[in-house]
Structures are given as structure tokens and as C-alpha cells.
Image (tube, rainbow, N blue to C red; front, side, top):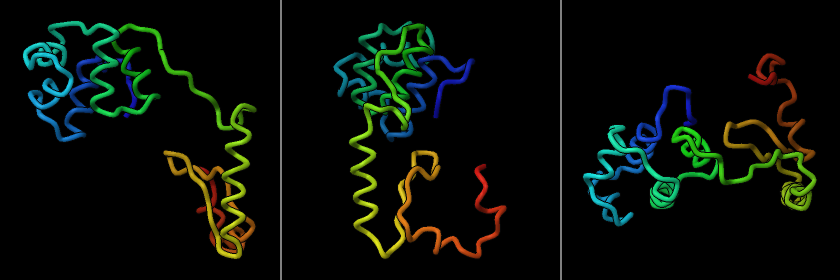
Length: 140
């Protein structure tokens, strides 16, 4: 789920709350705010502050990338940095993933991102994919 131009912070918060199977009262209690205030935020009758968005996002365990989308929907600048998988700062993490994948050889092992895009694979994967239709191996 990511912010679309017409999504408001309240709409996104409601979607995340429902995704986590929480009532407004339960979330309000966990975040130590009134249920009425949370209802006003979700309906758009009240504009949440940056700290309120972060507090609710913490309680809902919203991923950092989605927290940035939530902050942007409320008119605030993103707070959490994001990096591309090829970023030099992530080189040691990428090397660790490759080491784990090599440890699974001779069995095929892959690493995918949250959208199921193939990021890393060990040497056994091509043998697994041998004979698969080329159309199936193309990115979506």
C-alpha cells in the first residue's frame, strides 16, 4: 500500500489500522490518545501533527517507507532515509546475502524484495529455471 495523490493521511491510517485488525478504541488506547481524536484524524476533520503520525505509525508497526508516504500525505517532509539496493553503503549486507545463498548450494536459493523481484540467486538457480518458458522469466 502506498500513498496515491487522493489518499489523505487519515485514509492511510484507517487502512493500516484495519489491516492490523484494530478498532479505533484499541489503537487510541495503545497510542494514548482519545478515540474521538483518532476518529477525527481518520475522517479528515482534524489534521494530525508530525509527532501524532509517527506515534500512530509506531503503534501500527508501519514500515518506514510507508511512514514516509503517510507523512507526505499529511503535508510533511519524509523523515526516514531510503536507499537503493545497489547503494555502496549496503555492500556488506549484500555480501552477507550472497554468502547465505552460496551456503545453500547445491540447492537453489533466491533472495527477493517485497514485490517478489529477484535480487540475488545462487549458482543452482539457473538449473532450476532450465526449460522454463522465456515468457515466464521476463520481468513484469
